[in-house]
Image (cartoon, rainbow, N blue to C red; front, side):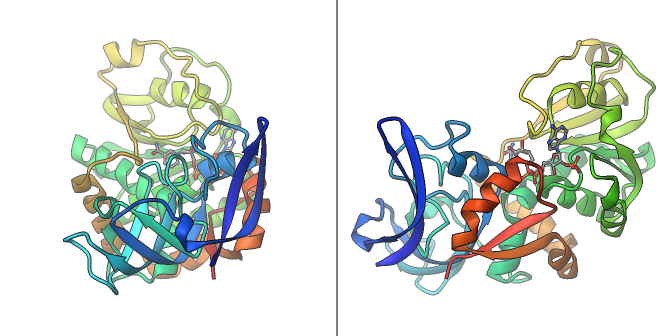
Length: 326
Ligand code: NDP
């Protein structure tokens, strides 16, 4: 038996609790993992509260991230004792996830835990940090360079935003951070932001074309914020769009794309192929200062994870939530 969060559904009503689970109930997979740490991402908040249909099968162990040690394997790439990280692939949505002491899944989904990090540090990073790294990789590979001007990060005090600020700064960019939390300006500056912007400036319908300000953008907010960010992006700049904290809508015009050659780069972390995953983790390992992880991440236990799910949806959480599942 092992402990885990279990989401059940009876007569359309969802319930969630910490449960004792029989190992025989673990789903199919060629690698079994002793989970050390998991996390609470925005998507885990949606899954655990049931406020969006993230979970596709019941019962479900949520948790789109995990880090731990391989305890059994028939997969050719992995041996017992290997330290591994999992982000996405529908884990915590269609396949049991990381908010439990054990997981069994497809070994193709795993990446090695970088030697630079402990399992706990990898979960301070989690899908949020890995997605921020995918966004930075996308902008850099597109050709955005520090000499072209400032890069805007929206949702800056969130998990994705915090890591985007740090990684962009480490890559030599001047970073402008848009936040709704004026009180967190010092936090954002400590991560590397030079300019702090009130997110209210971006949150309402704006003109289709606005003053050119940003060489690039990492947007975790969507909706009017993304539309305004595109309208403020410089000639031939790029916007990496990964989130929808304000909303999934995109109330924009094509003007920035057809008159300024602005590019919108879509970022998906869940099904991203192995090569960009490994590139993102390589960037994280090379550029992150592990001391920053202690500033960004705070730890809770499995029983507190259910409450943290509501808090993240309410925008009450700064940085990252690490869950010690043991
Ligand atoms: P967080 O909740 O940690 O961060 C979101 C941040 O957005 C908040 O901290 C807040 O920052 C800002 N925000 C919240 N509500 C609003 C609002 N109504 N209007 C404007 N800004 C708002 O979530 P994550 O960082 O984990 O995820 C961010 C987004 O990215 C989510 O939508 C998530 O689903 C998505 N995501 C997508 C992935 C992908 O593969 N594409 C992977 C990971 C996440 P502040 O107070 O500083 O303004």
